[in-house]
Amino acid sequence: MTDKAMLSSLVKEHHVKQAARKEVQENKRKEAVEAANNLTQALVDHLNVGVAQAYLNQKRLDTEAKHLHHNATNFAKQTQQWLQLVESFSGALKELGDVENWAKSIETDMRTVSSALEYAYKVTQESA
Image 1: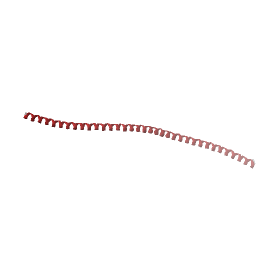
Image 2: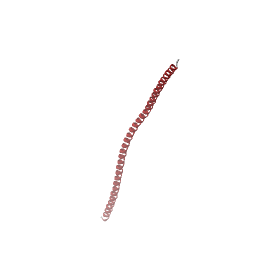
Image 3: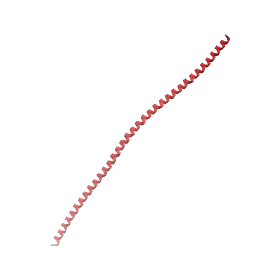
Image 4: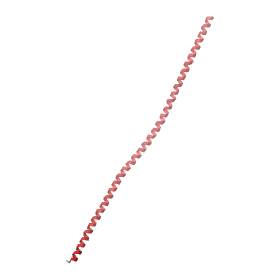
């Protein structure tokens, strides 16, 4: 074999090995890209589950907050009604107290009138 043939053979062998290395390297690059894509998709899926759960929790909290607000409003209305009822009851008791005082005053006046009439009757009977 001549030097030229040997050199040509070495160059061919080098090109064949280089092509094989490039093919292996390209396969590894494709595998790395696919693995990165799979990892990215898994991370996105994981985050989406968390976001979806947070969204559902927020919706539930909003519903509960509206329900609580509704209940608080109803409670405030009921409390106002109770206050009005108690105030009305208190006014009625005060009026009863006023009527009782008026009745006692009338009773005292009637006793005075009765005593005066009895005295006048006795005086009239004694003089007659």
